[in-house]
Image (cartoon, rainbow, N blue to C red; front, side):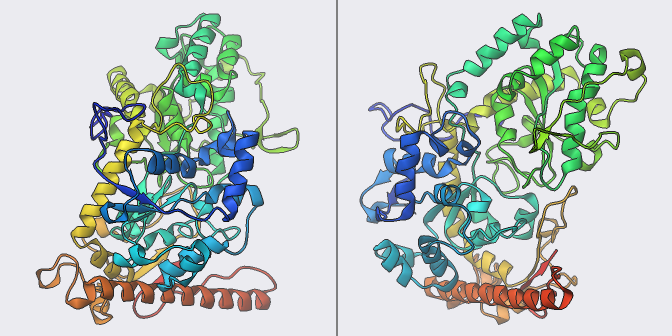
Length: 578
């Protein structure tokens, strides 16, 4: 519900005797060798207070590896006995390796070892690189193993220029992937397999958010501008770079904040007396101004989801989702712990684009920074211009509806925080080795329980059936919602409109629901049968990658360098690139 009350009991900063362990699961963490490259990187970053350990920097938004390593290894869910474990955690700091050493065309040794397990059923590299037993991987084909993904681009594969479904498709294999981003189109395309993923919020390790200082700064600034902070004097606020697949939308939002709102203060922001006060409120830094705005748009960037949608909520600003493919953690379409409509507005991203918005000017030679564009048009003349569609939509929201969204948002924001509020905190909690006890970890635990229950109900068989059918491989993001196979609207179908379950049955991959079995038919759906099915799937995907690379290379040579479009697959399962 909208309350944001955490499942499993009250959140506490540390485990107490009164409530020794509210989570109800046990997690065994592998002792991965200290010779793996990321350990040295982590020590250097911690020493210099950089990367995930910085007080305020862009890199810190990708600290999920670090936050969940602290949770799985330091909280009361941790067990040293693998026989009592519900889940097995593979501790990795892949994001640090990627951002410290730069992009590598090929997976690193430990990434290749994991890919060998997922795609080939080959555990030899796991034993040679990690020096660990494969007994627990083999026991359930890795379906009870947890791998954390701090960002799509730092997945196990990170080839240059790959977007769309490329990084997420690795997450269709049996381990439980805990990640910060999945798109609606991907969740619809792989309705069954994607449910084995757990979507969590981007972590925020900013001490000034956790200790409440940003809100206090906003209150002081509002007093200086002679407005009431509690009244949220700004209709909306947005500030972001000029990048991604929907740049025109970002230009429009920047133009609205920089030019439209200050020209129409008397109608859009009546509590702000003049342009000087407006500039004071909007140029104080994002975290401060979020606390002074009623609505905060969240457009698509390099990918559908952004940390912004969680940050604005944490600062009490109602998110306005202008990214058709974005999904909040713990919400539909594959989780029902929270309901997005209780705390956020969602509007069509294409309608928010305004053709009057000029192309941004560059400032200081830095890409993505928009130059200030003060307007010389008198306010009376500007008031005759029609307001942008987005501004009209936000002004039309009834006060009662805004209050409902805002009050729900204040509570739901806690569900997206890995650390509890603490007015005494002065620095990044990762530097202090604090155990994450915020409500976000309680919701994470509930999602892990959901995956385990669905596995027991035959989720693997349904996933294998799904993967045996053709799929659309979305290669990039656009300003409109990508096509979906429509599984939620009446069953999966092939691209030509015919059903694909029969071919899956012929391949022996298991068809959900046949002969009364929830996970598939016959012995092929026992552990050994499914392990072989996953190996065949992995080999098929790898063969497909090799064929596509060969076709693309040959076609590029023939066409003099332009990248060709891969042909659609024939027959049974396969992928059509868009």
